[in-house]
Every structure is written in structure tokens, then in C-alpha cells.
Image: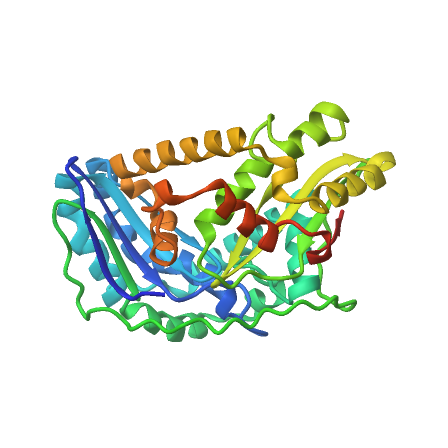
Length: 369
């Protein structure tokens, strides 16, 4: 990962500001799983005194915790973001308004409720439990017992890490100076390895007359080829006319949807495919996925289909250039795998990458609800 201040000039009078920190599930181990997410909530409280002004200026703001980042962001008209930017940056970095013990306890309850919400559906519960079972990975949502054990005093100590961001991303007409500069980033040590653990810590989720069925990659992809992989996945599973949808939904009526995508864990990528079907048809759906993934990319995707998906990706990139502030995650990913060379993507290249990193039933394990 690159460190530093990313300033993207824009000709439109809109600005975006984001502070990024090296936190998230990939950095968390036993005893701290879910702490990054809780700290995200708490650090947001430091700029609570400015909420009314943010509202009056029409400046939107939020934060998120991903596998390898905690990000706080603000966006709006440039003249409005410029009025508030230094204030909110000072709040986050200088900690003028640290939370009280009562506020900490209340926010911890909120995070535990959000934790529970993640297991309210079979679809989310299967995905989260699969990461625990096969990779000992607990997602940024973490583990309930670790969140419950985190104390107010722990949160004050952890807050010191947020004095200096690792990344300052700005889109707009002018920039913001940070009080202490940036913290140098370190390369993530990929600690994921596949292991089917029978004693994994899991959470319960609803089960009815339908089940999630699919396949999860057992071979992480530690290569900066995300945009190419993404295009390959779109060709295979994007839209009702895609090969996977055509077989699963249009021909067989097995499911309303087919999910095909990637989870980005630090610098590694995991692919997965899954859908929901009735209990009586789970085996049929599993066999369809196995059959599709035993083929080669060029057996399923025509050059005409590839060209249509590539053209759509180019349009999406043009939209991002018009409003680049809406794509903070895409911008961060682009540090590793730039989309600027879309015109050079060829059917042969994408087919080769897909065959090496997506196709092949031997790289997947069953995913059952």
C-alpha cells in the first residue's frame, strides 16, 4: 500500500475529504476482533459538536470499517467543505472532544446490536461463519466476546492511534493541512491460510425451508489484478444475461439470484459464488455451480459478451471521473491496480486471468446454509 496525501483536483465545485487508518479485521487477532469497528463509532463522536453546522452547510459525512481501513469522510459543495474541513480534522486527530464513560457504554451497546444484525439473515450469516470456519477470519464486525470485554480505559488508549492518519484522500479545489502529518504505512503481512476448522466460533442465523448454497475459494489471490478479476466476474455472473444467471435462474428456476464476487482481505482476494434455493434442490444447485466452475472462461463467455461488459466498465469509470469523490474505495484499490489502462484489456488476457484465479472447481469448498 502507498502512504501519503492523495489530492485529486476536480473542475466541478464539489469536494471530498477522507482520513484513512490502518485498522480493520485483517489486523485484529484474538482478544481484539471487532475493536476497529467500535473505535470507528467512538471517533465519530469527536466531531459531534459540529453536526448542526454540517447539516446546515449540506455536508454529508460518514465512516466505515473495512478489512484493512477505518475511514472517516465528508463531502459537499467545495465552499461548504472548506468551511468545516479543518474543524473536523482537528477533532479526529487532536481529540478535543473524547467520549465519556457513559457515551462509551451506550455506543458499545449500539455496536453489539449492529453485530447481531449481521446474523439476522441466512445469507450474511453463512458468509461470516464461512470466513471463521475456513480462514479464522472474523470480518470487521468481529467477535461478540471481544467487543464485550473492551473497556472505556481501553478505548482511551486505542484513541492515540488516531492522532495521525495513514492516508489523506482529498478531491476538490483545495486541500487541508493535517496537524501532525501522516503516519507511514506498513505492508500487511498476509496471515490468511485455508484450514477447515471443526471447532470454529460461529453464530446462529435463521434457517427455514431454503438454504444458501455455493462455493468459497480456498486459494486467496495475492496479486494486484482486482480490476481484471472484477471484469472477468462481471462477464461470468453480472446480470440476467450472464452465463451463471442463465443456467441457474432462466433455465432451471433454481434461485432468484446468483451472487458472484470477491472479498478483499488486506491485500488478498477471495472469490465466491452462492444462491438461495429450497431445501429439496440444494444438491441440484451445488452441482450446477460445480459444473459451471469446472469449465473454462471461454467456454462460457463470448467475445461479444466480453466487449459489452468492458464498454459498461468504461462508462462506469467516466462517471467516476465526473464525481470521483463517490468512489473512495475504488480510489484506494486503484493505487494497486489502476483502471487507466482499460483500453488495453483483451478477451485473451481476461480469459487467462479468470482461468487462473476464478475458474477451476479444485479451488473451491462447499458453502452451505
